[in-house]
Length: 410
Image (cartoon, rainbow, N blue to C red):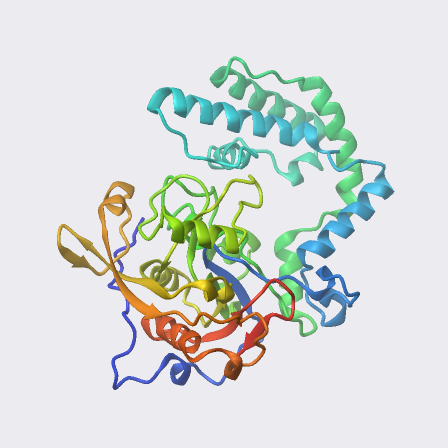
């Protein structure tokens, strides 16, 4: 995976300037949000219970938030006469293949990857095999599309004999969908080019998954099928690298993971239970309970190597309010020797020994804090500890679930 590009920084020496002093005063016009690992993220104020204008209209953002997008989809479904599951003929088949693949792994290897079974893997597999079908294909010559669709369906049926597909029925539905979605489709590269070179806009891109789920740089094979690190902005949207401005990493004050895979700082004890219960840690898509553990700075430094964070948003600090002391994973040892990199191999990652530093807890409620000075000194020290070890300034601290439960530091 090309992880050994260089040893991670362990933070500035006492004589070095702090991350806060190192940051430049110039901010580029195009900010980007990206995730570090197992993270929460923000969406626009329209998602709150208080009616407010969506940033897409209020500030000229090109993209809209998840809540606004849902409202727009509901409006389009009502206008077109389709229900929430109007496109199920597409998704149910890919989901079925995903489930069959997981069952096959379980039967052959005695374990599975723990996918969401939403058909993401099969869709990306078809893309890599150059047999995938795109929206532009659906909206072009439908006879050619139908022939390719039939070939793709037969390929999957040859791999999974129990897979049942109503090919003609699906094609009939897809033909109807084609006309409904045609007015909504534009050439993506030209669309982004116009946005970047037209009237000044703020463009926000949010990573849907965390860095350790990236297909190339994550904890392979327990990853998603796409690039969810910052490079996905270029490959996914056709945006040139020079147009990327700020890159903000969003990280919890502790570490979580859904599903299978190595997790060096996991706490399978009362600490893990406390973090899971206080943090309401459940997988959004699968509903699975998230595994929880201490903050792992080896992972965060690695995510910074890949993404190049401008600043960090440290969320859910309030979940640690109940702890007498807090441990932070600062380095790994392998066979008794400290290693300066994040291991690419899962078997090796399972064997590392985590070196921790223990910090005092603050045993105080931080959910009412709105300024840096409102945080207990021990909580401030925790934030500074993260900054110094990662070498990136923390710009926001999250202390609760409400939209205003955030402290902005600069």
